[in-house]
Amino acid sequence: MTTPSGAHPRVLILGRAPEFRADLRARLRALPALTTADGPEEGLRWLEGQAPGVTILAEAELGDLLRATLERFRELHPEEALLLVAEQRDEGLCRRAMRAGAFAVLPPADLASPELDDILDEAGRYITLRRGNQQAQRESARDALRRHERRA
Image (cartoon, rainbow, N blue to C red; front, top):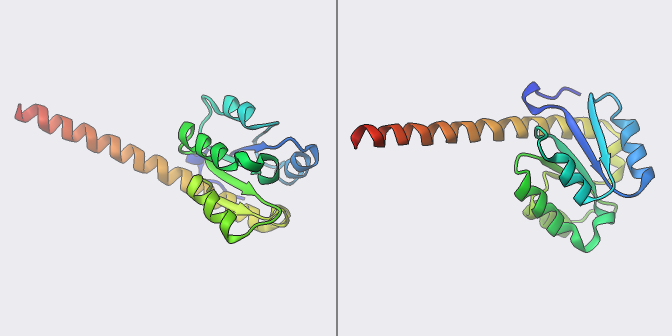
């Protein structure tokens, strides 16, 4: 797995089920920065001050709070790539999750396949692109302000 250096290859695994977290930890053990959290609040606290990365959430453990949780993560950490793992993945769930801010929705089987590496690589590119776009927007705003000040 190769993640662009600007993406800070960091993964947060969010879920209460110890077997879910242990399986993912074993699969991703090669990553230099990997941590786990029991629930959304703990995960959000851990993300404060961290560089953007990937957060993997267990859909079954979020239940009715899925949309609110994804939206809260997106609001507080807009550059974070949120991967949702869903036992029963269907089109409706994927649409709801993507609208709420998920980067991708994966079935558990994909966590043990090379597809997870591909998704993490894609997430790294997404994070790098978002950071570049935000930097370009800041520079554009500064240039517009300078032009305005020169005219004034």
